[in-house]
Structure formats: structure tokens, C-alpha cells
Length: 422
Image (cartoon, rainbow, N blue to C red):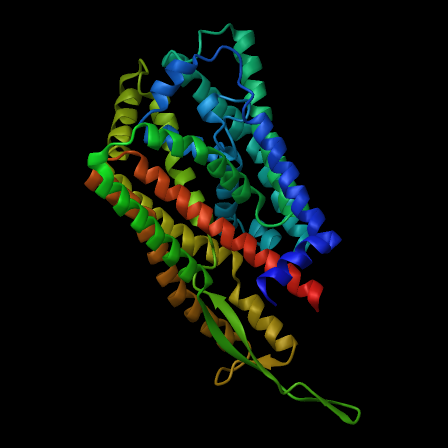
């Protein structure tokens, strides 16, 4: 099917068209709320504070641009991502949660998601409280009365929960992963402002650096597309079965195992995991308790050291790629499904041997995918340390998320179109 035929089918099919329009409508609502500021914001002081601050730049990335205007959605999907990480970690430690997520089907996953949503609320309250106090200390917000502070805390917490709900609705009634699409929309919405700022501060002496950055961005985009679309085909043969006077089966196909099963989720998890200690360390840095202030200063010193930050970022992306793949890909379940359907991998016995074989294959290909994803994640940080341009690290992370989300969305649309065609 050609591109024009797919495009025509996308808009002619009522179900697909409604899903696409739902995503657009949900993102439009999100962008409207993302520009409504909370009361008493010193806009000039806020811009000075955010300029060149990598930590709050990444936090602004997760808020979909809401932090740059201190909107009611300034927390973004950060609390929900943190809650998801906690729940995914619990599946490795508590058998009940693992059974709920992997073995009880759709009903179990719905319960698991409900627990993640419930955990989002206290995390949003803690993060909102810390962030509001931090902004007051920086003079971006006036010293508020307890009642006004409580109202602001309720508003930003409700904004985060609302954004979580919008993301869940996109996942259920739209196309693609709702949380990733929300982050993607915030990045894209900031593009005109970032381009205008780059043109306004354009320096002719920096032309080679900008050209190098554009070339690197194109290479990274091509590499991300190649690795994301790469897959390892595992041959599968269906045994012949006799029903009455007819033979069924006997066909050969393959099981596609993607090189990067986790997609962009490890990047989002790693950034969220790095942002949480930075937020609390920044909050407690000016504490009157000496030990707490010293620990906070040490954490900030470590995370502000670019080489150390880059190594931690690489390690977290690498580990989260393996972790998320282990949670979402179960070789034992796939081996059982193959055996129930009379299928087998040539040269491998059904059952336990198939489970071990699939486990070895997914471990090897995930190593390549995790290594590549980690290198791509820290490459902008390396460029930042070489060129001294602070926005490159943030821009590289945003580019990685944008490319991965677009590929995932295109793949889901293509799958829906194939179903409609058949």
C-alpha cells in the first residue's frame, strides 16, 4: 500500500479518523491549560532562573512546557512517571504485583494501572510542595500565606492528575502511548519559540558549531530510526494437524524480536530517576540542619558534574532498557503460547528449552539496543562539554523522544491500517 493510499484510508475510515481527532482534541486541551499561570508569578525573574539551568530545563520537558510559564500543569507527567517506575520496581520484588501485571490479563493490568494512578497523587503533592517552596526561595513567587500556598499546591496537583488522565485517555481512545505523546506535544509546541530565540542570539562565529550540530542531529535521527525498526526474526514452524480428511498447519513464519523492545521509555524513566534526587537536593540545600545541607550539596555537586552526570545517565538508560524489556517481554509465556498452538522453533525443544532460547536471544539483542540507546542519550552531553553550548543536552534528549514517539505512532497507525485493509 502506497503512502497516498494509507493517507486516504486514514481519513476515510471513521474509526481511525475519530482516534486521530481525539488525540488532537486532547492535546489542544492540554496546551490550553499549559499556558494558564498560577497567581503571583514574576515572569522576568522566572526567565532568568530558567536560562541555562539544565535541571529545570529537563523538568520543563516533562511538564510539556508548563514550567516555563508556571502554569497549573507545571508538574506535568513527572509524578505519574515516578509512580510507574515505583510500581514496575515492585513487580520485581513482590510476586503479587508481577502476577497482576503479567499473568492476569487485561483485568490485572487495569488494576495495576489503577494502583499507579493512586500513587501519583501523594507523589504530586510532595513534588508540588518542594517546587513551590523552591520557587519562593528564588524570588520567582512572592511569600504566600498558608491558605494561598495550599490553594496553589491543590491547583498544581490537580493539574498533574488531569494531565495524567488526558494521557490515559489518549492511550485508551487515541493512538500511541499517551504519556509519550504529551511530552512530545510539549516539545513540539516549544519549537517556534526555541527557533526564534536561536535566530535572535545568532552569532556568525558559531556557524561551524551549529552546522555540526545539525549534521549530528540528522545522523542521530537516522540511527534512531534504524535501531528502532531493526528486529531479529526467530523462525517458527507450525506442526501439521489432521482434522477429518484435511491437513492444517505445516507453515513456517517468524517471531519478530525488536532490537529495542522498550522504545523511548528507558530515556523517560532515566531522566525522571535523575530529576527526583536533584529536586529534593535543591530543596534541602539551604536547610539549617548541617548534615542535610551537606548531603544535598554533595548530591548537587555530583549531578552538576557533566562527566559524572553523563555516566549516571548512560548507566540508568542501559539498566532501564533491560528492566523494562524484562517486565514487558516474558519468554515463558511466549513459549507456552507457541506450544499451545502447535508451533515450535526449529532445532529447539518446546517448553523449557524454548524459554531458555528466547531468553538468550532477547538478552543479546537487548544489550545492543541498550548500549546504542545509552550512547545516543549521552552524545549531546559530550557535545555540550566540547562546545560549551548549554542547550545541546536538552535538545538531544528532546530529539530522541520526538523521533521515537513519531516512529511508534507511525507503526501503530500502520498496524491499524493493515487491520482495516484485511
